[in-house]
Every structure is written in structure tokens, then in C-alpha cells.
Image 1 (cartoon, helix red, strand yellow):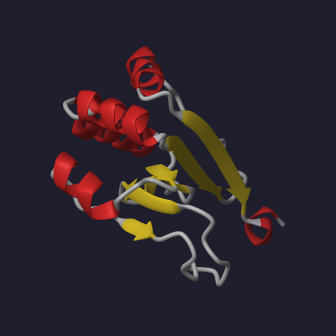
Image 2: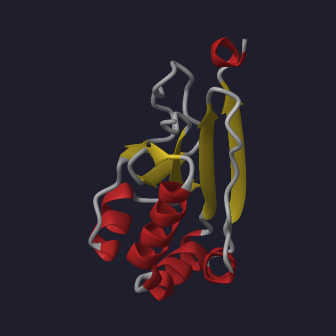
Length: 139
């Protein structure tokens, strides 16, 4: 049976003092998405914060999600000192999102290993895990 559930992980940095270009240049990374305080957002709401987002590609929600989490940690691991200095200097918030889109009553979950938990802690990062169940597939 083919595994149908999908998942992705992303991190977001946000706050009034965030400069998208300055942050991107210091990290030598291009965000997947960004927005400025006061702009109209993707879903029509006015943004309350400037944000910088880095999203990993969507994968299956089984073993590939854990690989994406590890890959994201590896991308940012060498930049932790730059990020923490920027966060403290500019009073920026950060959050990690894990999104699982469950289908076909599949058993979904995510493993957060000690390396990833330490990574989140170093960045004083909150974590939000959302599991969306496709109602049509569970009938």
C-alpha cells in the first residue's frame, strides 16, 4: 500500500525589527516566503509582523518527514550564533512548524530526537505541530 499522508516542516522568524534583506544576507539564505508588517498576507489578512520563513519540501509523513527535519537542522546549525545574536539584538521571535496532512486513516506522527530538541532550545524556538485529517479519506 502506498503511504498517502504528506508533511512538511518550516521555521519562521518574525518581529517589528526584522529586516528581511539584512537577515537573508547575514545567513546567506533566501527565504521561502516573507512579508512586511502592514502588507496584505497570502490569505488576505493584514500582516501584524514582518516575517522570514524557510520551508522544506513536502514529503511523505512517514520516514521522509524525519529526514526533512534533520536536513533543516543541518542547514541552520552552522548559523546558530548569527541567528541568536540577531534575535537578541532585534528582539525577534522564532517558531518551528511541523504540518502533517493525514489521509486514509494512516497512523501519523513525528519523532523529535535530542539533536533537534537541542537545536530548538539554542534558538529559543517554539514548536507548533498541526495534524490535519482529510475527512473525505476517512469515510
